[in-house]
Image (tube, rainbow, N blue to C red; front, top):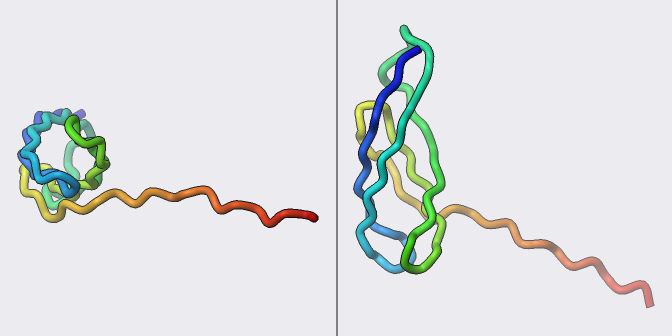
Length: 78
């Protein structure tokens, strides 16, 4: 099993504050080095959830606001 420690530095999509995140990625050996991952990271300042797309070499491809699904109210019976 291959284990990597990846350090990511991003800006929050909500408040713009810098964030440092360290991730431990594990997987099978022999996989393609171009394999990427998505992770949702909440901002410690404003609580906005940021979705980060990155590859195992530490390259960040996109930082977007994570989509939140709100509950749809049901219509009233009366």
